[in-house]
Length: 340
Image (cartoon, rainbow, N blue to C red; front, side, top):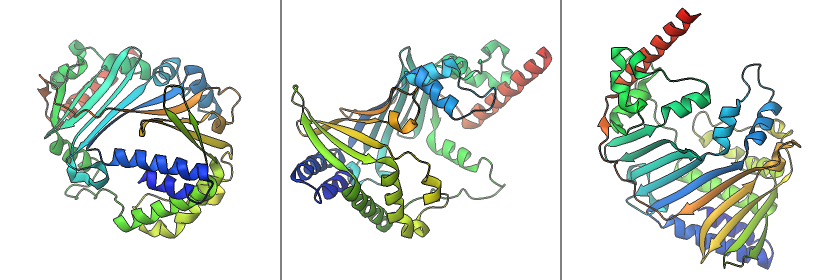
């Protein structure tokens, strides 16, 4: 789908753009035919840059980003795998049979979850996350009996929860008693097609493509466009479709975007043997901050591996988890009040 947009846009340009668009079209088409896709998302930055970005947002006193959080985020990587019974391009929600996501940094895995069969499997490094976020986790010996079921979670071991029960519970949180959960917002096929066409037209007008080869045999295709112009033009194309968008998807006005930077942004696509292996975007210029030297987003494609259920996971009841966390938090609040 994305490849079709890029190829269509290139058709309105030079021979180089046409060739680049066709190659990207073929690479994305290969991905779309896969039943399992794996990729890694990497925020290519450092703690100093994140602190500078936070300072430029003028946070309230006491809400500034801590050194611990900046260090954790700057070194974080997100690995994702999605598995379907059908090719990804033909898949609907009911076709997906497995999903896995893991967040890690230089010190190891921070949190991970997998959805396989009827269960959602979770594990996390509670102590590391707690310290980084400024919320030290109480020791198990300090927790009330109601929180005993969380022992495996606090020890960083795998636990599993019935996925349907979890969805029912979370969907009903905050709702009136007896109220039915609101349906998930979705786009109908016709609207999706029109949005795709609007994006294609915008890219055709605004994006410039170039190609270059590497010594290792890989090929780079860059797509460059002025950020504010690209976003404003695209939103202008889809405003007639606003009434067909799900509730809550309100489009920003041109006035809302007038202060957005119009710096040119470049996305670099790496292809090897015709397959997409990496996409990187340099976002540093968008920050419009002299202290922001390194700010990029990198997506690396990996060989698709089917998510598997981890062995030895302890099954937990969702009500037990919520009750245990509630008791744990109440106990912690009482401890802090007594200490004061």
